[in-house]
Amino acid sequence: MSDTRVHFGDVPVLVCSAEGPTLGKEADALDIIGNASYNGEVRWVAVPAERFDDAFFQLRTRLAGDIVQKFVQYGLGLAVVGDISRHTSQSEALRDFVRECNRGRHTWFVTDLDDLRQRLAS
Image (cartoon, rainbow, N blue to C red; front, side, top):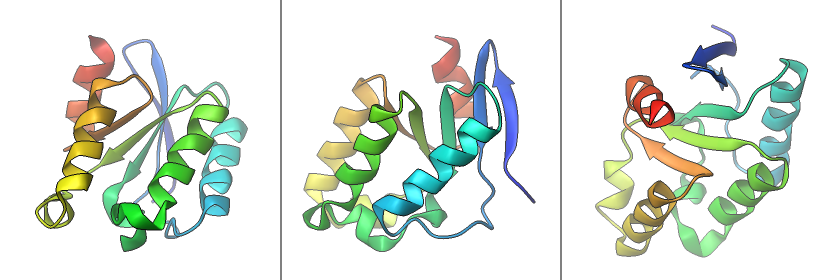
């Protein structure tokens, strides 16, 4: 399956395939951002949680901050889609990070695409 451009309401979203490469460094985020640009007008990118290297969920590595910042710089929202409970159960700092991101307008951690669709509709 390849990445797909969809509309959730009036919001264009690039839904990334679960089979794509792992996001383990900032350059990997830039590849997705470039793909989003190539796919036309996109305001959000939905990336399956399993595509992220475990280092993303270990805040001390700063990978999450670097990747989130790249999306913000390019004016794209980032939705991490899927169950990350195995990571949040081990880190209070990550739970706090997820909670703060979900209060904002640029990065959300959602359980599935329906959850993202509902958030974008409100």
